Image 1 (cartoon, protein in one colour):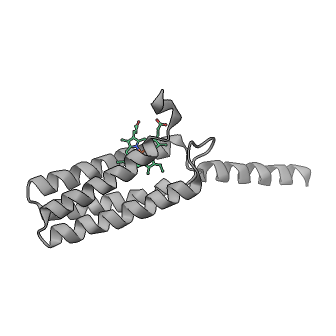
Image 2: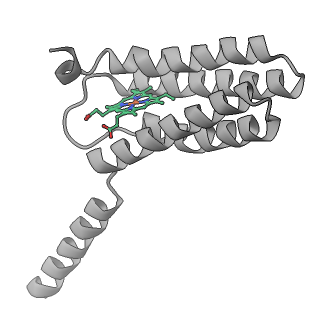
Image 3: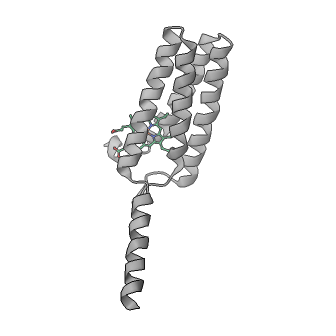
Length: 130
Ligand code: HEC
């Protein structure tokens, strides 16, 4: 009986640690978002709407994870991360609407606003500010 309980607890802990979103997951997602931002910029410059739309879709899929609290200490609050995620989504949608309407300058402005959300959070990362 005791052994059974222990096994269950161990399994539970294992499942939790497998599901936990850790620093490596975060870094991976950040790299995916960086690549998506690159696609968006490239799409604007090459006048390739579908590349921009693809970049926006990739960005939005991954940006959802920005609000997940990482294991261990964070330099920002979960509420802040959530609001940054929301803003990234809003401005990314605007980039998409702009490019579909053929408004490259507006698309570029909203692209910069997405970038500003990235930078606002990065400026809070203590080890990056030393
Ligand atoms: C709410 C916070 C937050 C937001 C918003 C955010 N990041 Fe990050 N970013 C981080 C953290 C935390 C790290 C990891 C720093 C470390 O541990 O080295 C990071 C690291 C990165 C890295 C470096 C990854 C590596 O392998 O070293 C890139 C690239 C990056 N972010 C891109 C982006 C882009 C693009 C956006 C916006 C679309 C963005 N980030 C938005 C928190 C954020």
